[in-house]
Length: 285
Image 1 (spheres, rainbow, N blue to C red):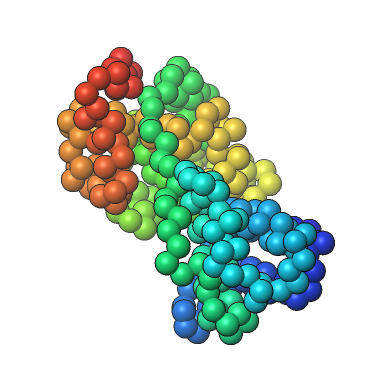
Image 2 (image 1 turned 30 degrees about the horizontal axis):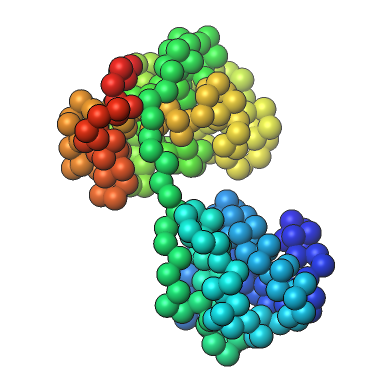
C-alpha cells in the first residue's frame, strides 16, 4: 500500500517496471543476480531517492525506463556529495534489477561513478540523560541505557534480541559475543523480573517487549527504544565507541573486537581521535 501511494501518477509501463524492482527489494531474488530481501529502511530510502528522478522523466514525456539513456542518468544525478551517492545507488539498483529481468535492454548506469554518502563525524554527547536513564526506576529504561552505554550494540540488534540470547552472563549477538558488565547484568535481571510479573503469559520471544508487542510475536520499534531511553540509542552507542577509541588511542583492532565493527567502521572513530587539533575528543565525558 505504501509503494502504491509512492508511484501513483507514474505512467505505464514505467510504474510496473518500478514495481518489479520494489518486489525484488522486498522479497529478494533466488535467480541471478541473487539478492537478499532489504530492510524496510533501505527500501524506503531507495524508492524515495529514485522517485523525484522518475517523475522528472515522466514529465519530460518518457513512458518507459527502456527509453532512458546514459545522458539522462548523468543529467539526473546531483552534482556531488550524499545526494549524488543516494540517487546514484537507487538508480543503479533499479536498472541492475530490470536488466537482469530483461525488462530493459541495457543498463545506462554502468560505469557511472556516484561516490559514497558523506559520513557524519561521531561526536561525544551530553551524558546527563544517560546517567539519569541508568539510575531510572523504570526497569526497561535502565536496562536499555546500560546495554548501549556499556557495550554499544546496534539498535537493530537490541530490537531482535531473544530471551535465549542472554545467558551465562553473556550476550550473544550475530556478529560477536559480549561478556556483560556487572551493572548491565543487574539491570537486565531487574527488567526480566519486571517482564515476567507484568506479562506472565506472553508468547513473545523477544527480550524487550511493551504493552503493544506483549500480545504479538514481533519486536519493539526503534522509536520505542529511543523514547524509553530518552535519547537516541545510536548516539549513545557512538559515544561509547568514541570513548573506547580515545582511551585506546584509536586502536582499530580493539574497536572491531569489542563492538563487532568492520575495519572501515572502526576507522571512522580512529580518524576522530587522530585529528591534529580542534578535535571533539577534547573534554569528552
